[in-house]
Amino acid sequence: MSESIEAMVLATKPDQNARGSAVALVRAAQSDMAQQTASGYDAAVAALTQAAGLVSGLHAETAAIRLRLDHLLHEAQWRWWQAATH
Image (cartoon, rainbow, N blue to C red; front, side, top):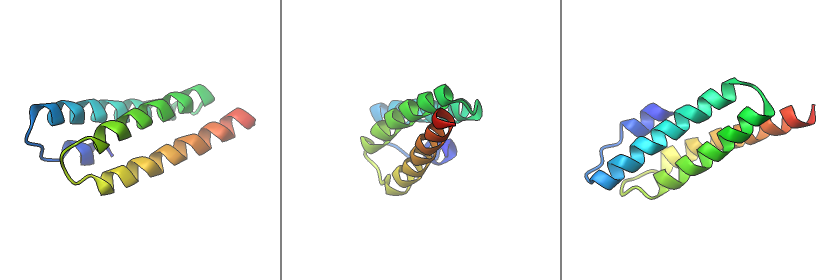
């Protein structure tokens, strides 16, 4: 997922900085999800929500990446619910 964001060609420095932050957030979310705990999934949801906001603000076509982020966010939410209720 982070590779797709990294591969985006962006012309402006603010967009490039936002892309770098989004990549870091997605990687952190993936690491958080690997903990397989409710708190890890909770942290992943927060990071993915932030990353999605950053990607949405980029001056580029981001629909496919936003869709993938949305799927990952839903997975983290579902796994959080599973971990929190069992």
